[in-house]
Every structure is written in C-alpha cells, then in structure tokens.
Amino acid sequence: MADDADRQQKLTQLERLKAMGEKAYDDMYEAHSSSGATACYSDAKECYYDAIGLARRLEMMDEVAALEKRLEHIKAVFRSQFA
Image (cartoon, rainbow, N blue to C red; front, side, top):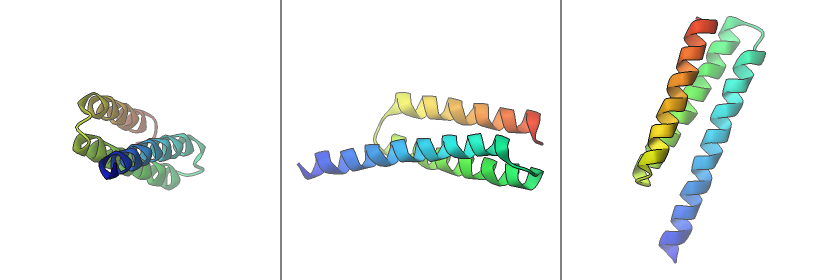
C-alpha cells in the first residue's frame, strides 16, 4: 500500500512539474523584457529537467521521451524568438 501511495504522490508531482513548466513557457510570451523572458525560460527548463528526472526514476521511459521532446521545442522557440 505504501508503495502505491508513494508512486501516486510522485505521479502527482510529475503532473505539477509539467504544469509549472507550461505556465513558465506561457509567461515567457507575456514578459515585458528580454530578462523577464529569460527568467521564465529558465524556470520552464528547470521544471522540465525535474520532471524528466522524476519520470526516469519512475521508469516511465515514454514519458521521459515526451518530456525531452517538449523541452527541446521550448529551447528552440526561445532561441528563435528571444535570443
């Protein structure tokens, strides 16, 4: 039972990290300065790095791949539009 509860807690945390990463990505577009956009970009990357690590620990390799793909997209957008 404890293992199921722990896994569920980690899955909830994974969803929270993804949501925070997406919020930071959205906020990047709303930033009023390049430093503000950069700060949001940094927050998005950190959330996704944490989510990738957690998904890896949960042995959710399809999720890891999806998160890595999303992170690469965010990086590409930032480089093309804000850097």
